[in-house]
Length: 338
Ligand code: NAD
Ligand code: UDP
Image 1 (tube, rainbow, N blue to C red):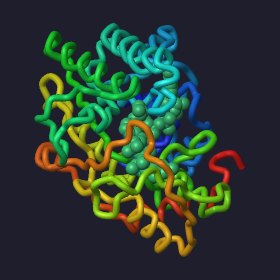
Image 2 (image 1 turned 45 degrees about the vertical axis):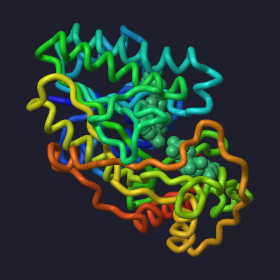
Image 3 (image 1 turned 30 degrees about the vertical axis):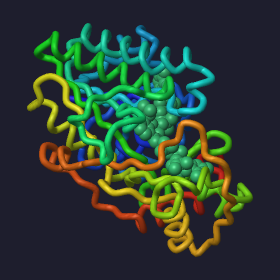
């Protein structure tokens, strides 16, 4: 039996495909390469000595999905495919709802037609909305999202909940990621954002490698330890391993469950910057800028449910996140485009 990984050529997807292949799972990847390079999976195959079936195609394309389910013995789906830039989603809400919500609906319908009933969804801490108490815990009601991106994740979670309630054979796990960073420790695969990075760590790494002049820190007057924003950063390989644990748990799950995947502690922007400088030996110049619209001061996960029920918790700390980010960036200053 095989697992279908949508968006498997992307950042988190490629690391998860690597983990799946390493343990011997059969993997089929469907990705339209809108935000990824074919090279990522070539490297995964070099690293693992194993092959994943790759199909270039869109989750909105029913004919492609029908062919995938007809031609491969798919038992479960890990669904990464989607658009993920919060700021862009406020400018292009229809594209975000089309890709993230309609795309997921089309995928679920074609799964149902093919009799595939096990589903893992890439959700996000953003579904807790702006007013949830910190640390975020799964018992807090989700909602109050502040961007079309966040609302698209919320909508899919609600769709999964309702579908699972209506079909006793369908089971779904939503994994609510906190802030994924880092890279595989080979430095062969990693995060390769298009254009100027939105996220903190890719930005810092591109300053260190000389592609950008200085980091802008978005606000130093938050009510946090040093005034800069606090987030729960999680190593992408820990996150990948969380998907394997969730996949193994799915047959035992009835209905829909959500789990936080985070480290359970928060670091400030300045703490991240210092940790990166220490790991890389590179100074990272920065300047304080105004707050970024929509940013929260601080949040991190209560990750105890995943530990209890999935037997998962992070095993890689800040220094590994930084060393692995830097190894990837140094070996691949222009990302996958060499
Ligand atoms: P990514 O952009 O690297 O990966 C997404 C992949 O999906 C890309 O390879 C892209 O080409 C593909 N894709 C997009 N639309 C598609 C479509 N319609 N059909 C087929 N393929 C399509 O992003 P990532 O960081 O690896 O994120 C993976 C998932 O995790 C996304 O759903 C994202 O929203 C979610 N997530 C990411 C973060 C984060 O900070 N990286 C945090 C929380 C949740
Ligand atoms: N941040 C920053 N400068 C940047 C990018 C991010 O100061 O160039 C801060 C941001 O304000 C937040 C933290 O770094 O406090 C993490 O931001 P990121 O965009 O990586 O993740 P988010 O939690 O916003 O999804």
